[in-house]
Amino acid sequence: GNRDRHMAPHGVYPAAGEDLWVAIAVRDDDQWHALCDVIGKPELTSDPRFSTLEARLANQDALDDTLSEWTGERNKGEVEALLQARGVPAHALASSAEALLDPQLIHRGHFVQLEHDIHGTTTVEGSRFRLSRTPAKIEHSAPTFGQHNFHVLETILGYDTDRIADLAAAGVLE
Image 1: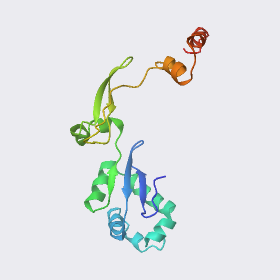
Image 2: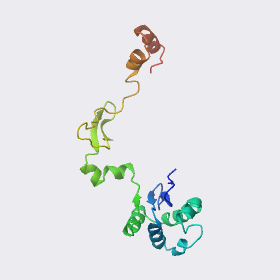
Image 3: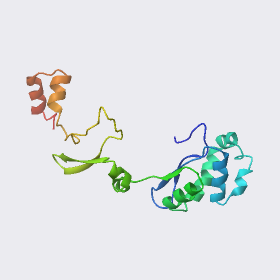
Image 4: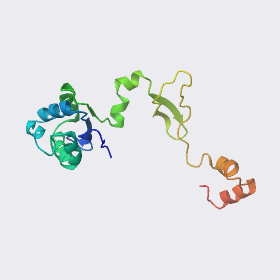
């Protein structure tokens, strides 16, 4: 799951809309108090189930339900902005389409264009790591179905050419 043994609440919560989410991580009591103010429930700070980190950790299901009610009624960007403005770590989860438009990922050259035998030019994720001495390079797109059959059968499994031909004739490699 998304829980953490040193933070509560800590997880991914539903936002308004279908399959939209926001991640929230409360590290300390100051952030907890700020979150309670933002969601309009300052009384939660004195609720025995949530007043200390230990209590919040012991009552995470109820805590997650309470927080999900609030996040579920709001746009994920709104939740992110409201909480971040008060110093609470929060970030709206991005769909693949949103990630492709992310200015920071574009700036870092995170996405690369590759040619695929069936799909033509495709956009794929590059390496998340930037290493000066050993830079990662994405050179090949995903293989097509069966593209590496001969290599696997001969080199890895040790099949001879006649056995591979028999498999092909039997339709096993289609």
